[in-house]
Image (cartoon, rainbow, N blue to C red; front, side, top):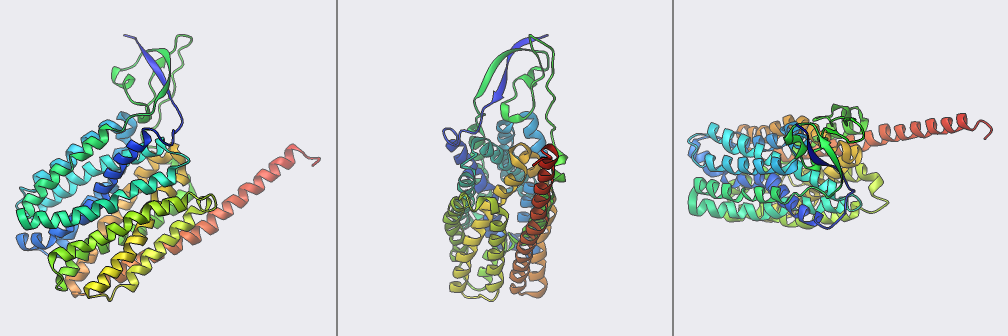
Length: 455
């Protein structure tokens, strides 16, 4: 039975207004999504004693969270395109919180993998991607700055969650710490609630489809099936997951580079606290090392976002991103032999700066390649492909430590991977993307000649 509804056409990005509230929500979501898998490492020593396991066993917890964050991208894309950002984020918030609460009752390491790893990781994934999509819909001209500010959530939360985790561990044990952390993750639901769809231009129409589809918010990307008063044209539905974005050569180059990046990007931060504790650094001081990284990162990301907004930098974003990758890789390699606390602090300062640059630029580069219309599907596919690499990186580094009892190897490994990715991205962008632009220019010129043969 037909009912009267309103056909809505989403207006352009306001670059402000409620967008700043959306930015705040994205800031919190990014903080939990990227800082939590690292901050949970303060519990690893205690978990190793509790379950009689090694570095590689505990590193799997962080790897599974990150793998779910990355690998659940297509699921998140499909759900966002079908139901919209807000309901998906609300469900994700409850999953993230519930996973940690259930994890506090775990009796073996496998149960932690399933609860703190899979369930919490899935919940964070269902929050992270929709928040980026909403941020992209609210900002256009100021998008690099908005991405930089949102990305700053990761270091802010890392600075807070790491010492907080150590404090909770000292007072309540790892189970109490997990339980309280689960409560904190409920804030993801509040962030989902503020993801208000953009205002729309409205016109009357008669609906002849399911009631649920009529109620979908504009950002869902699912066109309402309507039968207009004047005619019965039915707009085509948007694909839930658009694989055609993979035809873009720039996106393929980006995916290859990012897969190499995530093999080593998270390794130093995940194993840093255990490394410091093994060198005799007190527990609280060891946890504070992550806070140093986070504090420097707080200023690095927005600053990098401002620089990326400059008109002479934005067209060369891929090269700027390559520079950030090289900086991060060289920081790892040059700091491999640091063993005293002062050396570790210096490493954290430079790592925080370079890591902040990578974090601020990675999604801006992706959005620049595929545009807003293809960003949802591209992000989901990119994260899925990267999930395999992020699942391998930290456990393999932990295995090297367990086998050779030498932390230098993991810094050389991680640094080498970042340097390789930076060089590959710069060269590939120069060779293939520049050649494509040159070819397009020639084709346009020939086309103009054909149209105006006298010219």
